[in-house]
Length: 341
Image 1 (cartoon, helix red, strand yellow):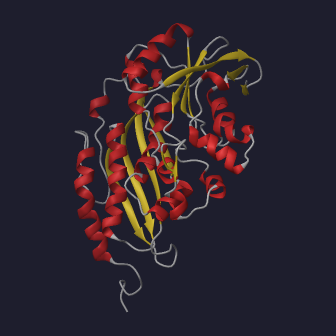
Image 2 (cartoon, rainbow, N blue to C red):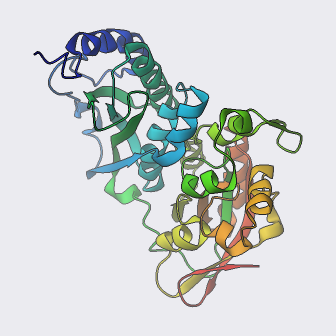
């Protein structure tokens, strides 16, 4: 008996690392001090000595049951973007700049080419957010996961000068809410998605006119990364008073997370066009509107609270960054929470 006969192929692990290296290379930053394959990743902070109070911010998350769609469609090159996005968007929400990322892949069987394809998506996400992919782990766990399935999670660290932290504490009545468009369902609520639609290859390959693509393409669209968009707003001289990453829990749970006590967000549902995928899901699943807004981003992946005087500058900066953004509401005095009207 040996380790390979027990289901763990060490040689496949070595091959996976070699195949990953070409993808990881494109994420490197000058601050990275180590090579892939070591026991840890090292990152120099010398570049940030000029900050008054350099503050580390971190985020960790996974992709959740969206992975089930990747398994069915046998498409693994974008799911890594989702993993990165879920971590770095949270960092950007606090005003931070992502520095580096580490991934964790657990699988039933290590197929090196598949693992490298997953990591290629992670590297794409890192490139989109200017984060270095400085390490990770691939754990082959026979008997724990089916051979053709895996889980994917990640961890990111960013930095911000303490004075530039976005805390929401200065949000007040009269401030304006600006929503930045999502790329679709992103990476939340897929347990409900999988109840609404048949999770078969045939169903996911069905073309819908209202979507302009197949159902699988619409659902597997990677989560948008907002790091550069928020940076463009900051570089335009705009102070973001509050920022909410709209993830699981939708509008009702996430928007209040950026609000101080004594104010309430008022969002106008007709201020932008809700993407077709959400309308299709609500109709097919007979899901109540309140539940949709309590589960999904409904087309808004990031919500900003701004001083009214900064709104035009912010919208111009977002447009220049290639983002669709809308004035979707305002802040009023009242109990902390959200009113949709």
